[in-house]
Amino acid sequence: MLAKDIMTRNVISVTPMMSVRNAALLMLANGISGLPVIDDNSAVCGILTEGDLIRRVGDNWAANDARERDDRQGLNTYIQIYGWSVGEAMNSHVISIAPDTDVGRVGKLMLLHKIKRVPVIDHGHLVGIISRCDLLGLVIDAPSEKIARDDDALRLAVATRLATDLGLSSDKVTVTVKDGQVCVEGTVETSVQRKAIRSLVERIGGIGGYVDQTRLPVHKKPN
Image (tube, rainbow, N blue to C red; front, side, top):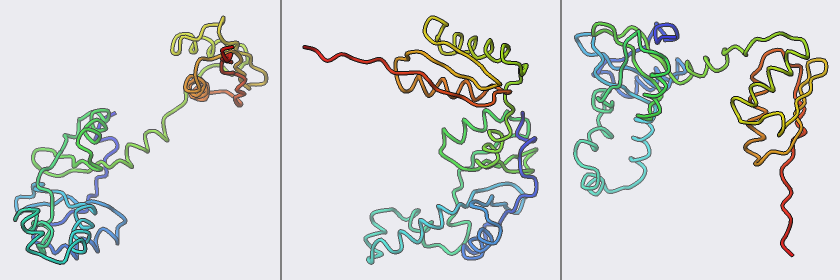
């Protein structure tokens, strides 16, 4: 799946000369946490986020002596915090993508740069934006693995996946299925392994429930 398949196309943007107050009102009115900033050439020149605005409040209240803040943060940061316009408060370092970027790469960029939204640029113009919520939607809409619904097919599918994905062969765990309900029995090494089994089973389509009868090994106390 590509960025153009999940991006928001009707993007609300602001200009560098807009006041930060009006930008904040725009965020609140539309229920959004970030705004791309568009210059006179219709190019994205920055991003203004709720974090940028909250930072202004936090830094304004953090200390009373403006001169101390000036020395501590530097003039550029001082302007970013106290300037009245979007152009002064925004982050001008913009991470953007093309419409044909794979959504997996979009997720990696967000994690790598610790950002919540990525503008989509086509031939120098803003055509959309992708937020973390758009990626979460993919998780919600992801289809389960579809297999036959009879008990034997389910048992075989679960047992096979336990062996290939988690290294749990039939000599370690036993899988039974009755009326679509999957039961896994046996001794597992850790609680994390137990959770992994549940995640694997619940990902398989067609099950009518999961019964966990696995157990952790009993460690005998030394005499």
